Amino acid sequence: MTFYLRTAGKADLPAVKQLLAVTWHDTYDALYGVEKVNDLTTRWHSLEALQKRLTMPNSEFVVADDGTHLLGMAYAQMEGKDVKLHQLYVLPGHQGEGIGQALLSEVMDCFPEATTISLEVDEDNVKALGFYKRNGFEPKGKASDCGNNGDRIPAQILSRNLQLNS
Image: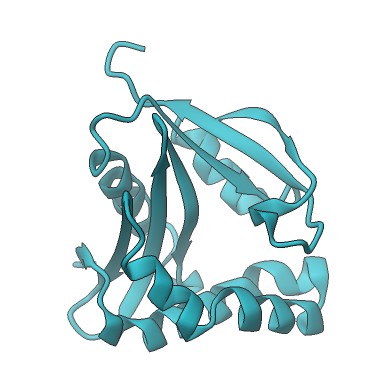
């Protein structure tokens, strides 16, 4: 499959919102229930919330598309010498095609001065945990409120060194 990575723009946001809704329901309905997933995606992935990310300093918001449809997205922000990967999602029907790997590599390459990259992931999200572990991430702790949104969703904190000789 051929796909392209590029910086997200305002025109992409409705498709990003839809992609997030589809991937969240696919991943989290069985864990949280449809109603809670609807609530979370409505609040966390509103067009207003996504638009704010387009102009955040020290951040990268990238999308993957096939020239017609959005297939994946990633958003990360530099905090000190650490890159915080806030989002990396690929449509369920396109997972395993290298899109997530390409998005992760792009995000890591965007912050050459960073020493680490970290993220939070639900402890029950087995597919995501496997993906990140295959990409060199290691457990570094736990969070009681994933994303600090007040929803009290526990998460595993994963981190990986970005230094070439580490």
